[in-house]
Image 1 (cartoon, rainbow, N blue to C red):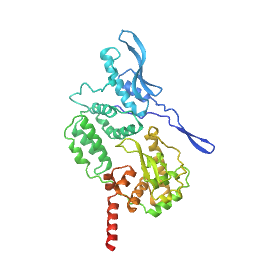
Image 2 (image 1 turned 90 degrees about the vertical axis):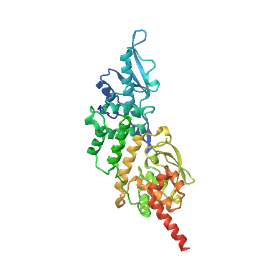
Image 3 (image 1 turned 120 degrees about the horizontal axis):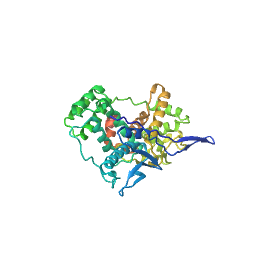
Image 4 (image 1 turned 120 degrees about the vertical axis):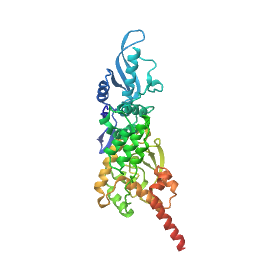
Length: 396
């Protein structure tokens, strides 16, 4: 199996002006050495280079009139990390047609929907993963979010590396899943899910056995933090220049941690925030401050964060993860015996909304997920609220 290395990217930096930190965005520059090395390793003597914001094949090619010409062939892909796997696929497709026809193919294979002409009767693991590359990136623009999704998928698929030349079978997928993971764990659940995706693409039968061995995992249920202690802690942490505002905003609006970097508070107790849900397109929703009386004391309108994205096109999944990982580590170190993670603050908002008798559908909508997930996640708290309400009615 050909190893896939992450591209090297020059990130934005910050400069200090007048005591304030200003974000300076630099043009993203991608190191294509790993990509071109992988292409050479497959015996293809072509090179990918970037020009402005696009990727190209660079080489000397025979034209229709028999002449040779040094030229760039547009790959029709942006120069972002998520494009690199599809770029490799397109270069290989192009090289195969170039060898077959003897001249630059017209039209280029990716101008229309490209399907492999032939799938061998005996499919190796490496063949199947190559098909998965093409299937995953087909029609995608190579956004940072898509790239991170591929990274998570490939993190499981690469566990088949020792069997790259072996025939891919359901027996092999089950055996590797059992060997590489422990029963009833999240890692077993993830490897089975991605192996099944690969197996379906390869046309395998008997994949139901992956469903059988993945069962038994139950996410650990965390205790919800005490509300008074939580608010007291956030009031103390608010003075932190780097993470104080983000922590207070997460407590008050209950959004996903990475969404805090897009949150724009309004004077009426609501906030505009981008929804980062893997299952849906990124778009704005309205969040609700709860309790609203803490907006002013926590200085929510004095927004202080080192990184933000206020438009959908500014969102960078890799940078969002880097920021939230740093923030989460800081909160863990500063939350004492409460031992908090960022999602504890989001969950605390949900519990607060239940105790405030906020309509379940509205609470789910402001949190950016569907009502089914909301009820499932907070079932015990909803049940408790129902019992408390019934007790009050009985006392009357």
